[in-house]
Length: 131
Image (spheres, rainbow, N blue to C red):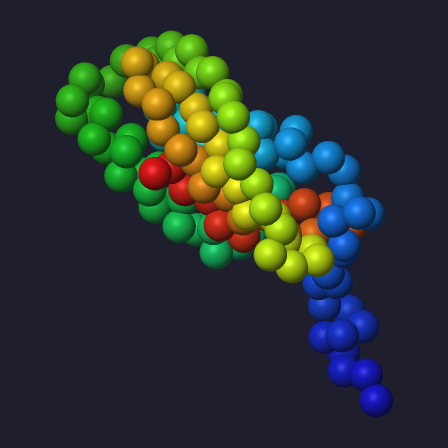
């Protein structure tokens, strides 16, 4: 017998059935830096984030926003120049891709860690953080 969750819940999708993950990884790395720098609203990438990731990043964005206000005061923020570099990725399971994307901005090079899972025929970020 099949449960309702098996029929109607999120369905895993194999990597072979999904689009090129490099485009998604580059987009998420760029967007994550823009959110941290106050140049992009987190809501603009919510469609690709797991709900728990979205909630955690919402708290982070609020803290960074308050820190920017204390440091600089209210001001118009210019979009930082961001270069997305190398991507190191591996697949530990059929519908999972774990990656580190190197980004350079404000004379810093940082790593963005991403865990993508194929869910309901699209990529979904189940973990996302700047290291």
